[in-house]
Structures are given as structure tokens and as C-alpha cells.
Length: 313
Image (tube, rainbow, N blue to C red; front, side, top):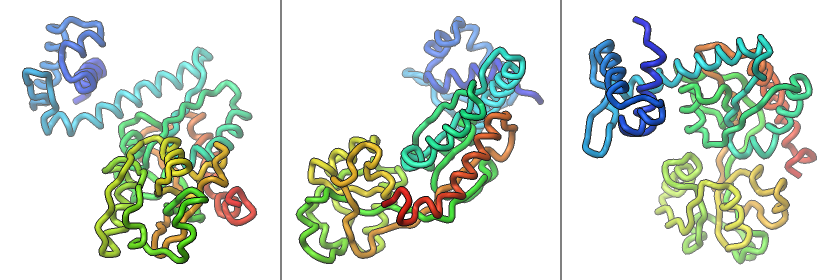
């Protein structure tokens, strides 16, 4: 049984807009026409994909199972058309890369610069996110490559390369924070301090939370939350907050180096490796394959680059 791309686009539009009316408007269809398309898809699959409510539509368990496959099929279809158009000279090649903030602020610009030197007509689209978000976007076909921290391979994700160099998060504070004059510190000594962290259910925040639990401590309340690394750095640099981030995000590129630094706290450090992932199934365009190879070289070179005397000094 082959799934019809028109029906899958209709399905995705309803997922994204949450109602038949808004989805129909986005697709420039009448609502009855969209209803018929959805009905055909549900009859073809012999399962209900949505639950109808007064306020809109939500996915059933069957719809939730179909959604990542529908996203991937649509993304692969667009990739195929884009690649053929690029071969015909009708469209420039496009590479979609997702990356964690510390990769964006360190080696990703070098990889893009080297790639564009070889492919001057190429366009690189960068999406920034956390590792778990990037894994989801990659599996759904919303990005072509993901640069994040090491995680297990899955049926959808395949490892391209992993760095030997290790980087983890640390407690960070302004260089003039009062705690710096108190000598050796332990996590228990941070009681009563104000913290600025990413929201809950994001990797760094959960990692920070588990750090306290592992030492038998109750995680302290968080005074400020932000997804933006720039906002978190500003709070730490000028607001007296403590933060939790890798050294690569201390602000060298933004002129903040010298205002924020690691606060030495016994047992408060994690270890992670950078890694590049691609989808296990599907094809890579020629440009994306070239980007994959360049990222592999950059990641494998991280060991010497990040040691004292490299960009970490």
C-alpha cells in the first residue's frame, strides 16, 4: 500500500493547525474537501487518526504513530525534487543542519566556510536546539544532519562521527561573584544562590537536577528560566546568578569572556562528546554528503583544538 503525498500533506496540516478549518485555509481547500481527503486516508489505513473536539482535533494513538513517518516521507519527497532541480540548474542546493549552541559558537562556522568555498552556490540553513530536540527533528526529516552531544543510536538515527575531546557543563558565575572568595566549594555551599537555567525537560536542566539528587541534595529553586543562551549569559554576567553551561558558551564570541567563568565546585561537572548524526534511512544529497564529510573532519579535529593553547585558552 502506497501512501498518497496529498493525503499526507493534509494530515500534517491538520496536525500543525489543530483544526480542519485552519488546515483547510492553509492548504487553500474548502473544509468539506479536506474532510474527504482525511476520510480517504483513514479508510485506507482502517484506523481513526484524529479525535474530534469542540475546540479542534487531536491525534489518536494511531495518528501519533503515523506522524513521524508522514513527516519523513514528505521531507524525502521535497529533498528528491530539490536535488533534481539543483541538477537541472533550477535551484541552488540546500543543506539543513541542526546544532547545539556550543557547536554553533565553535566549529560549525568553520565547517560552513570550508563547504561554501567548494560549493559557492549552496545555501546552509541552521536550526539551533538541544540534543533531544535535534534527534526528533532529524528523525522526522526536518533537518538533514544533527550536531549534538553523544546519544545512543536508534532505528532512525545513525552516528557519523564522534569527538575524542570531552566537554561537559560546569557551574558558572561572574568573575566578581562573592562565592569566589570563599575557598573550596561543594554543591551544599551553593544553598540560597539564585540560578538561571533552561526550562524543565531540557537536557541541561535535567542534568543539573540529577547532579543535586546524586549527592543527596534537594535541587534548589530556579529564579530565572530562558531558552536563549544569550539571556542566560547576561543574567550570569550582570545579575549575580549562577548558571550551568559548557566552557564553549562562556561568551568568547560575544565579548563576555573575562566576565563569566567556571566556578570550581567539587563534583559539579559532567562529561560529554560532540557527535554528528544522520538519518539511518533515506538518501543524502551531494551537498549534504559533502557537509557530512566536512563536519566529520571538524569533529575529529576537536581533540587538539580544544586543549590548552587552542580556542579554550
